[in-house]
Length: 323
Ligand SMILES: [Zn+2]
Image (cartoon, rainbow, N blue to C red):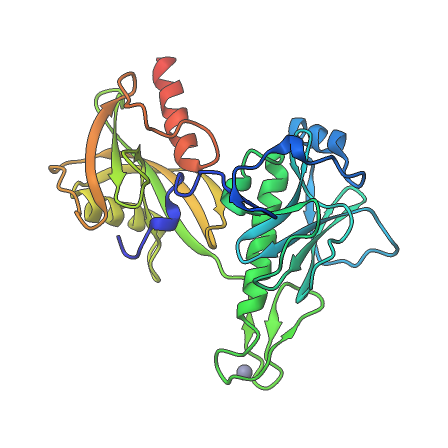
């Protein structure tokens, strides 16, 4: 790997432990009443019909209905409702270091709120790590929470110019911070990473899956790695496969992408075919890498779910099953 990939692991940190007033412990939803300022029905509707999110920085004319994504260093403030967690519909009573308009869904505005570290949750609220929020709120809201976390984090870490050290200013019309002294611009940072399913056989019936050292326990998934400066995505796929497992690949084909806000990756999925060489693992990164038939996969393999690794594998298995 060109750089550490622990944050690309689709499973790390999935155990749900929510801080409550009584200290760390499992969350008991029944202990918490549903606040009146949450629209469970709306959230359920969104889960069934993902809304069209319009990203922009326009200020609303008046007091419009809103959702608030308050972020405290990778954690999102939610309220426990009857059907899982919900995003606040009124601005939570917390210290605010920055407020960002994320965009809107229909006539409802969405805000990202930067909350200082160490801020306790208001009554009936919980801080939940973004990764653990997956599945607890509708998928579109989880994706927007990831966007909020990245924008808040970027804004917080670009308050001074990297060239001359002057305090930067937010720009009105675009998501950028500008240095008033030298004009240097800083945009939200993205770190592109490729993730690839490598197959072999006359009908691509085997795939190479690896047990990464960063995975929590014995768990096999696709290979992945960060794109280097000056490299094309296809070159990156070939290099990462060569570095991690020592084999050559061909037929590198784009599959799809996924924002992965841990902390700011953009995952670019590919399929590729084996083109020669013996599997020799890079031991600093990988415990074991094996070829698995689609109908003889080990138990601990992502299938669908929250990450593009699972989507790649599920897509391959479905195509094999239909053959
Ligand atoms: Zn400057």
